[in-house]
Amino acid sequence: GAGVSQSPSNKVTEKGKDVELRCDPISGHTALYWYRQRLGQGLEFLIYFQGNSAPDKSGLPSDRFSAERTGESVSTLTIQRTQQEDSAVYLCASSRTTITEAFFGQGTRLTVV
Amino acid sequence: DAKTTQPPSMDCAEGRAANLPCNHSTISGNEYVYWYRQIHSQGPQYIIHGLKNNETNEMASLIITEDRKSSTLILPHATLRDTAVYYCIVRVRGNTPLVFGKGTRLSVIA
Image 1: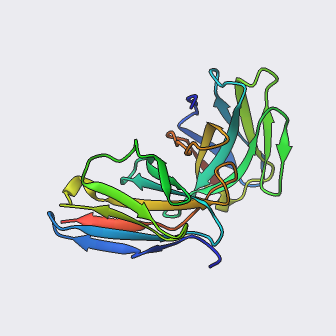
Image 2: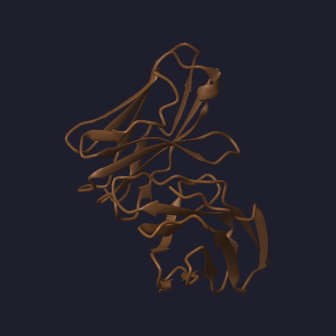
Image 3: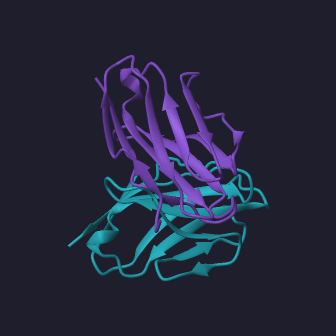
């Protein structure tokens, strides 16, 4: 596609449920990044992939968060047993390599009620 | 990554140049300076990056001091659509993620 695509754009879930957020990067981009942005806050780095490997998982806030990437393409961010503090916009970005500029999607707005 | 310091907010009159400063006094020799911006409710957008030379593209100019301890992003003719949060990031080019700070909220005023 022309840009980074994220789905769903909005997700409302009940506390305790699991959610999966999807990111389709720009075709051919080997690097993929996930960020979280709480309301009125800055971007919080979660994890990035180089190909299908995740060299840096240091930003994942707890073991309820996991991410995978397959085929050097689509990535899913999974949050298990969601909590209200997980409510945020989750942003995905991709770049052709790790040294070129990153392009961001429009994000998934997650609301945990 | 080295940390950056930016003013929390700035105003600029429409049509005038917007000069956004960034301090990165602990930058190391292999770290680049990147600028991104985030318009309300959108994902961040890449603007420009540089190592030590001044850079210019269709969006902006980046001026880096000779000692590389600070830089300035210049939007030559600000418009209302340039109202956004501007992030200055220093980063080693390679297998490192972009780490965003709090940025500068630029308000362009008619």
